[in-house]
Length: 337
Image (cartoon, rainbow, N blue to C red; front, side, top):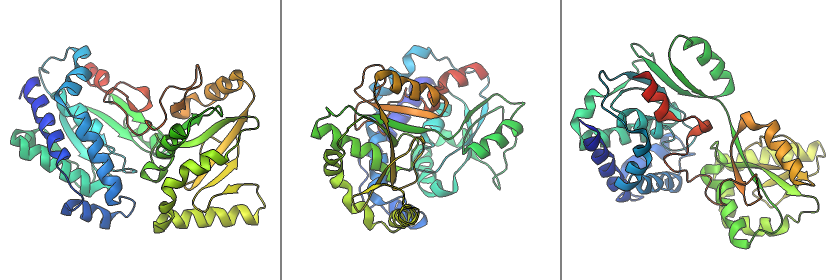
């Protein structure tokens, strides 16, 4: 296969994604295997990729790299995350679109849906059977480079284990929003998507707010009401109940709207069902916070000058060129060839 043929395959995959409906049995299977992957959340992920995988989008993404056919395709091991549906697909796409071979280690939480995606690729172009293989018994053997995503703890293992291979290693990162108090109701409703999409389990989900002194949280709570039914999800409700009880027992000041707890805390990370916020008094305070945590921030949402980079509602709608941790995957793959 050449570059043009690979573009065509993934464009066709995007078209297939656009025809998926909630009754498809593979979605039901993935949900039964992992209850965090509700049908709605799976559909959101698939629909997002249906939009991204247009011929024009793929061309716009790859044109700056001036890709050439590799003289000898390299085998790239991909250790996938599984916190949200098909989160590992961008790495797979990057390896295959550059003409390399993917050695895939699926995340246990996302093994069902990702396997189905790979089946679709091979069904569209059977020759991809020669470019995709799975790690046998979860052992990685015979590979030239590695892309691995995991926790900070697993990353320390990755750094040691893959020290002699070209590697692209990703750690835990979190995202935040900078508010000014001048946001419209529409922007606050869009912020709700940034917070609650995929139950807030993605590194691009907003888990932290920076708000000005005297900020009124009430309009935000009203805007967040569109996600009030999230409390009916058993696993989410368990997290909410646990943290609510913990804060009450410790007499920690917090706000609660019966499905989300909002608490003032300088920590960057928030537990599931909790949204932490810090107060700033100047732009310098914002920039200082961002600089302090720059190695742990995935993206920043908001309209504040010098700090807001992503519009409200778009944190979980990255473009193909919005690379995790800001590390260019295609550039990494070009350099190993």
